[in-house]
Length: 237
Ligand code: SF4
Image 1 (cartoon, rainbow, N blue to C red):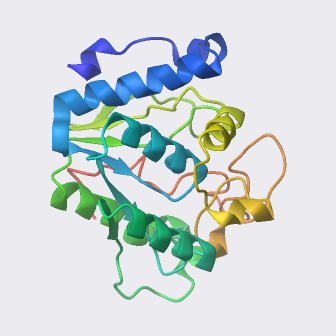
Image 2: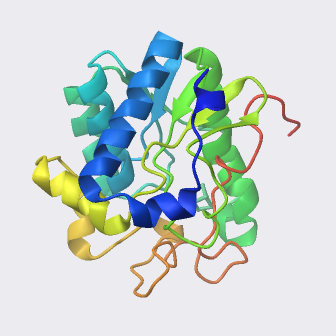
């Protein structure tokens, strides 16, 4: 089983492997996961650059690999437009959202709750409805302070494997891959964003931390929406 076979010091691999070796490693990880999980291998597409790269990698392994997109009422117009284009091109990408009523400006008063309702819940729904046994994510360990402890293959939820095939890639290498393969990307990157999210919680930011523009002014600054930290299978709301 993939979870038992993939080893290696993630921090060492970031430095040790060159770009081409990382691409090969990512393709191999997705290929092995596809052989093990088949149709139950599903990719989470956030419409950001890392997701565009893993989606392209996955399509090289098999055009049949499915994906899901979680959208919210607060996504920028550019992201919504990009989502429409991606879904038109790849009908195997399914959209999930939660349209239930929430208090006004919950993103300002309780961003954790807002993300739980608008982002984490639809991921749980996607996992359930699509019969996911292994999900592919675009997590990278060099992306920010909250992303240093992940593994390439992990089982944070018992019964749900998570594959992070570009975990050891640098931001530069993602851009290198997208440019070399002429991959369509979210147009917001043209405006200077480095990490994309909902409109009220995302700013253009400079500096070392790629996610520094997320949730500025809250305790969540540079942090996580919860889909990588909250339980997806066995949870209490
Ligand atoms: S990113 Fe902001 S607006 Fe979007 S779900 Fe989270 S708190 Fe709410």
